[in-house]
Structure formats: C-alpha cells, structure tokens
Amino acid sequence: MPSFSFKKEVEVRVVHGTTPTRYKIDVSDIEFGQTFQETSYAVKTLHNQSSFEGSVINRANPAEFSLSFYLLEEDTHKVLFDRLLDCETFDLYISNPGGNPLGTQPDPIPDEVWKLEKCVIQEGTFEINGSRPLRLAITGEAKKLSKFTGAIPGGSDPTPTTSTYIVPDLSTFTLGSDDVSKGIIGMSVSLQNDIDWNNYNTVQGATTATNATTSQYPENFSVGTKVLSGTISKYLEDESTSVLTWNTNTSLRLRAGNGTQELDFNITNCSFTNRMSTSDVFLEEYNWRMTQNPTALSSVITYTTT
Image (tube, rainbow, N blue to C red; front, side, top):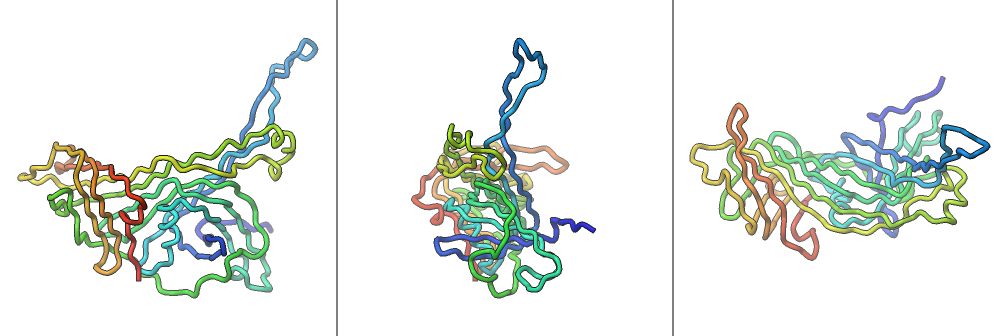
C-alpha cells in the first residue's frame, strides 16, 4: 500500500551560514512549489497544416514558499527574523518523517525530504494582537525545489528546549507625540524586499536542457527597494483629534512584548494617513510607511529573546 504525505506532519529545518548551522522551525503553516516556463511556436507549414503549436520547456521559474511561525521568548526562530532583515540566503528542508523520527536507524519507512535551495525572503508580516501570541508570516523565492536524499547538513538538531509564546502588551505605542495604544483592535507591520533574479535564459543552457534536472534555474538576484509599513485599527473615540489627519514626517515607536522579551520598532521618520471607517462601531485606521533610510534595519527593528 502506498504511503502519503500530510502537511500537518512535516518538519521544517533551516540551514544557514558559510559553516552550515541547522535550525528546526515549528511552523503553523507552510506552502511551497515550483513551476516551469513553456514557450510555444508555430509548426504549420505548406506540407503540415496542423492547427496546434509545438512547445519548448527548458527553464524553471523561481521556486516559491510561504510559512508562518510564532516569535518565541527563546531564540529558536530568530534565524528567519534575521534573514528577513538582511536578505541573506538559506536552504529549507521540509521532511515528512516515515516510521521513526528523522535520522533514526533502522527506519522501516524512509523519510521524504524536499529541499528549497538558495531561499530569500521577499516579505514578512508581523501579526500583533493583544490576545494572541506574536507571529511572523513570510513569503519568498528560491533557486530550486528538489527531492533530497542523504543527511541534512548543519549538524544535529538543537537540543530541545521549552517554547514560550509571547502574548504582547503594548508597553509603548506612540505616533509623534500622541499615545495611540488605547482602543486598538488589531495591527500588522510588513517589511517588503524587492527581489529581482538576474536573467538566466541562455542559448547554451536552453540547448543542454533535456529534462527537469538539466533545466535552467535562477542563480543570483539583486535587492532593490525595501518598504516597511503598517496598519493600525482602533475604535474612534468621541474626543479623538487624530481622525482624518495625515503627516509626512513623524516618529513611530512600538514595543510589543511581555516586559523582557519583545518586538521593538523604533522609527525616526514615517508618513501616515488616518481615515474613518463606519462599521457597527466607528473606527479610525492609520496606514503608515517608514521614510527614513537607516544603514541597517537591525537598528530600527529589534527582536529581543532570552
């Protein structure tokens, strides 16, 4: 009887660094895949009046992936937070353990492992809600998706530790000189990295491509514009003086955590608009975007762990 893979059972590992280090990531959801490009051409001639076209497939699109995970008090998942900020590449290994835990020998059912090679994160969204643990959802692209055999590099899995969720309090939340922490319904902060893969369609590569393995795959990329932005939804109070306003040069400070472990957004310059929303209860919504140009994003966004 054939065995099948179920997404809820997969284990995810990140391998990063010149000297590879392995990290096990506890994801709440994951999607991944890769497609190939098809180019059609006419085959109709005087001697062949075919109405159908021929096709050539010799190039793969960048692989795509998305996953979400909780930001913990421990530094278990910090490797992906750091890769969102610096756009360094890493490899993702998605395994569906067979009979016994990964790497256990002998194992009656072999593990199925997929590898996403040379991953880069295009966007990360921080989900901040006072009644739920801090969570980060990321999407990105990779050079290649393939079946993997052998031992996953980077040593062994880290020694199991506790996983402590951070249910955030808004210890600081100011926009300019205004405290905007009261009456908040929800908020999110998004960082977008403009990733552009270099052209990898060559005549030689097209000629030698005879199957999926020898197809042309993307290799290098450049990082263009970065956008750090967010949305704040809150109840509209009768005495509010902020609704239906805007500003192009103000500061924003958001600290969301439990007192010692937290996310800290410390932005010197941002622009925002504030609009009114007429749902069952009147709301006001801020939409903001950072306009300063820091040397490193790590000076603006800090994730403190134990």
